[in-house]
Image 1 (cartoon, helix red, strand yellow):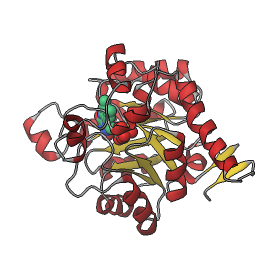
Image 2 (image 1 turned 90 degrees about the vertical axis):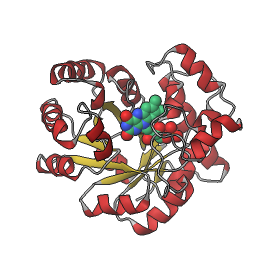
Image 3 (image 1 turned 135 degrees about the horizontal axis):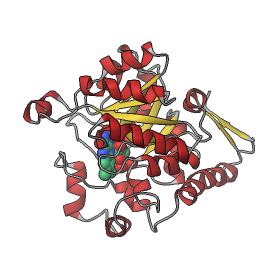
Amino acid sequence: MKWTTKITKITGVKYPVVMGAFAGIGRAKFAAAFSNAGGLGIITALNFSNLKKFREELELMEKLTTKPYGINLTVAPPMMAEKNPNARTEDTYIEYINLAIDHGVKFFTTSAYKANKLGDLVHKKGYYWFHKCSTIPHAISAEKDGADAVTLVGLEGTGFKNPNQQTSLINITIGKKLLNIPIIAAGGFGDARGFLAALTMGAEAVCFGTAIMATKECPAPESFKNRLINQDIFDEEYYKQIYHFQLKDKSIWSPASGHSEKILSMEEFMREIIGGAVDILKNLGFNNSEFKTL
Ligand SMILES: Cc1cc2nc3c(=O)[nH]c(=O)nc-3n(C[C@H](O)[C@H](O)[C@H](O)COP(=O)(O)O)c2cc1C
């Protein structure tokens, strides 16, 4: 089945799926596996302390895939930047964007704090800017600032929590009414049903974070992956960190881990999501050769 959405149109990827940003592990091998499996792989620039290391990673990426991919720029909020002189502010990323563009990158995702200066730079060069945020008011601001798409992370997701954050269900369905730019759904997605539900709720793509950490190509240690696939998501100590805003900057996987039962290759993971979605559609009587949100 062919998948056509505003995000597959913009990016040229086969499936409407976008890789999350990952501090520590969002590097070329992992991102290339995601791109080669049909999604938009993302290299997280935060993981490279200088331009030389970043250039080497871009060169490695060029060897590993010919498919589209993007770069994430996680911008430190001012409170964090004040405390940490090495924190990444918008200004520290300018040369990273220029270098990535020299290497043919066309897609840039920003996150953690507003990044309109970087968005403007990407636009000036003629490329695309997707901003990630967790609340609809922030998404509306990103749209006003000119973002080409917004990734909306629901309360189910992992990462920084916001006291005004809504669930993925509300973010996508209400966001669809209030926003004109495409929405990429994030937060708690890890199976075919969730993927398909997000597209029917109004998203133009789905972003996977936790779920792809249980893949063979994810550079996290095997012990970490085993703990993730064995996570009891109904354990109180676990779920209060996800739903009670206690996550802060603690690294923990989201309840999307409830969908991960074994460690799969990225190809197998993608086949489960896309193949499973096709089966669901067929069971519902959908016999078209194309799933289109346009
Ligand atoms: C280990 C880990 C590291 C992450 N690092 C970042 C990061 O540096 N920047 C960022 O914007 N998001 C980061 N995220 C959030 C993901 O990009 C994504 O928004 C989130 O995982 C989506 O929710 P899900 O885990 O339920 O799929 C991270 C997530 C995980 C699990």
